[in-house]
Image (cartoon, rainbow, N blue to C red):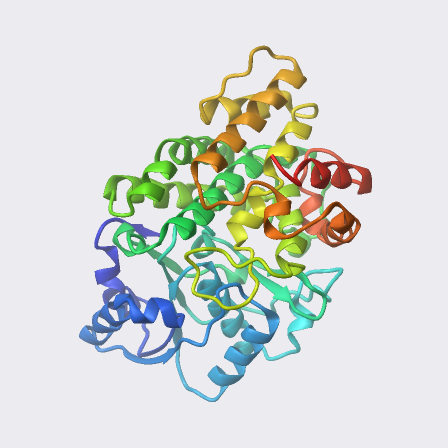
Amino acid sequence: MKFGIGASEEVGFDATRLGLKKVLVVTDKNINSLGVVSRVIDSLEKYGVATILYDDIEIEPTDESMVRAAQWAKEREFDGIVAVGGGSVIDHAKVINLLTKYPADIMEYINKPIGLGKPVPGPLRPLIAVPTTAGSGAENTAVAVLDVKKEHVKTGISHPYLRPTLAVVDPLLTVTMPPTVTASTGLDVLTHAAEAYTAKPYYAKPKYPSPADRPVYQGANPISDMFSELAIQYVAKYLRRAYYNGHDLEARYYMLLACELASTSFGHAGVHIPHANAYPIAGMVRDYVPPDYKVNYPLVPHGISVVLTAPATFRLLAHVVPERVAKVAELMGYEPESDKPKKIGEAVYEAFVSLIEDLKTVPRGLKEVGYKESDIPALVEGSLKQQRLLAVAPMPVGKKDLEQVFKESLEY
């Protein structure tokens, strides 16, 4: 990773160090219209790297959009990819890289039980990720998240070969994010860190038959703990500032730094219940259209879909890993009144809800994005399909646990 103000000016130099001669630049139409992409292309061309551009990317990634992009790319020649945008753009670039290098039906690579979970056969082309949001951390992860449209559920493709070769991370590229996008991406950072911090520890995992069977998510460990704590602290301090003043460069800097810390943390430790719940919340949306997003179709942005069930989830986990949940609450500025799990649960719930309330355009519960109590069985069913994530939780997660979390998340 290369991190710092102005880092994006060096993308061309970085591409030449990887031996690239002609790259596919992947972005979306909104980012392309802001002038960010042209600056990256200028840097590439300055160093003699030819470019071809693809910008037909959906804000929230779908299997159909990714397959369409890969089919377009198969007809072009390039020796590397530069992704400029948020998590959707970067995850599209990962799948374009995969499907053009090792062609197959995308369902063969999608995680079980929705897909076949076939491993990536070998190394991919060099991929440089240039994030323009401070949320998903896709530039650091070995996962590509997508919505399988026919199933109305989100899932992913996971393999170490998907991880970008290099992340070029420039806080200046995030100042154009509008308030709701800032809130959604920042809340994604927070939940990444808190979920990784409360994940089942690495030493509680069973031994795998061979190194090839080792999953991307390893469980909480000393390094991920350290990164998670700092990321939670930065979000608690800087997210409100970045939301209310997008040109607060100090806040933007530390929110992006928190993103990199949290994505490095969860990229190895894993995420669990809120992210498992987020997939059906996003996949089953009927009519909610968020402010600040240039879309004309229903959409629950990823960070919002994740945080909607976070308060109730961490209140539940206070009875399972009280010390960990108490630390999350303390880092967010809410010290529990005692070390009793009930008081710890109250503190962490209040910490999350208080932050959500301060970010005025963030929905306060599932009802505000169009869900009713009668939707809970379908939401639970969608979450139970995310066993890859639920297995990371510090407790066995069953139907009754998810029903409780969804019910308590209808409104705050």
